Amino acid sequence: MKLYHSTTQKPKIIESGKLKVNRRFNFQKYLIFLLQQGYEMKEPYQLKGNYPGSNGLQAPFMGHGIYCYGTFKEAEKHQANCQVVEISYSEQSSKLNLDDDKTLYDILESLSEIEEIIDTNISEEARWGWKHLIVLLKNCLLEEFVESGPAVGLIIYVLLYFKKIKVSDLLIRSFYDKIGVVGKPKTKKKYFLISNTDKIEEIF
Image (cartoon, helix red, strand yellow):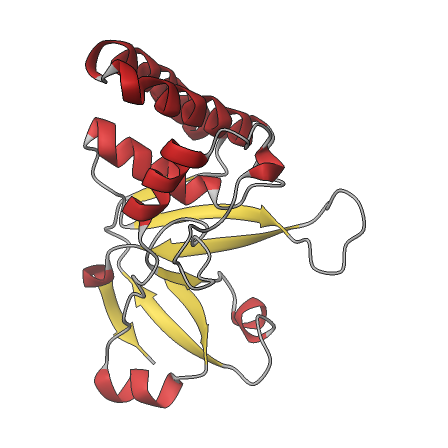
């Protein structure tokens, strides 16, 4: 399959033949911050996208990886003064489509299972922080992440923490486009996140 990545570093990428994943945002510190100090975040729009000491870095919407579009034109419009790297990605890759209602329902069920795990396996001191966070994340999912883009990557991180699931090679999710929008946004942009760069067959 073909994916398209917007970048200002195309010559370096082509020369090296590699795309590097930016892992500067520390999800562990983010999670600790939310567990300890996230009690004022009761509604999805209140979910902060970073933690003290993150130097302004925002939580990547689906986690760490290479963010791409499904068409050249979408990638070209992503930012000014950019170039587009075309990626040939293996069809033999696992995919998690976060636009699929069944997938979202399964994730919601997993979050409910985690609530039960918390009741029996987490110390009383830490339990309420976890329970508060899980309820907030469920609310974010139910409101379709309109006001809480960072919740997607955070949910995946929490699932990894508790369920020890294997991250899919490719994650797919459409986010509401809020640029220049007054009121509730109505249009979405679909993103593809390459979490496994070993499945990249060619870059050009």
